[in-house]
Image (cartoon, rainbow, N blue to C red; front, side, top):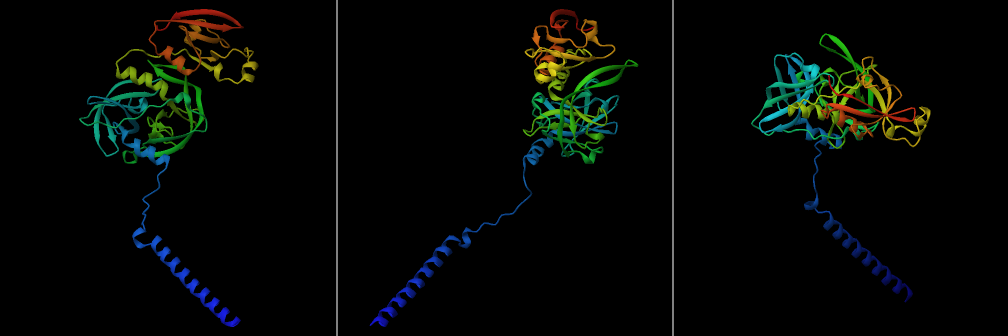
Length: 348
């Protein structure tokens, strides 16, 4: 009797196992039927970098000035007039300047203005089409170590829209430049973005994009100990807009190199015998031999607190005054912890 019961139990277990196996097979087949299979083809890999290039490369162009190749970009369009920004030294003295866009669309342009101190020139061309233009960023917020993308030309027209990845080495470094004006050299200080990037000569005038896809600088091949620099878009915008709007608000070059107290660490202010609680103003470190600031009575180690009642908290405040077109400048200076006032004519 016991053997008979065991045999029945074994047969029942075997039947149950067969049933479970059958059910699992049905469930598996229903989950992974051929109709549910999807074939995926990978056509390249998109990243933040590739998106920025794809969205902006049609606004970037090669510039051919009597055969000399440099870079540029469409800054804005008003009606059929397209305004293109490039490097001044790339087009200076040229008889013919052609702009070549990404799709080999080639248009002859006219130089409508330039600023040799910033190495910027503005071209205008006529187009019946709505052209892609760049989005302007804020170079004041750049940080050392931030990635930037340059789109430009390596040196020949067929290398247009080449891409280089770089990094902000120094957000705003002031270097001493010189330029030939009316047969003699003029020295001046220029505040530029210092780059860590491998850029060749043809990249002059190329836009620098941040990771938001906004232009924050324009490549200039001004070099100091073989460093590569870009002119910050914040200041470039003043120059470009003045040229486009035919406004004669030229920058007043004070001829000074300085640091803003708001950006100085406490220990640096202390080492310069500046009050710890003094955080507004521009500390004058150096002056050129023919400095205009000297004509106003400004000296090295002075702190320029304000100009025409504009408190100097950052470079944006300083640019606002220097490009304002004001006829006179009224300075409030801190010298040896004593506040003094100075004034003078803004332009000769």
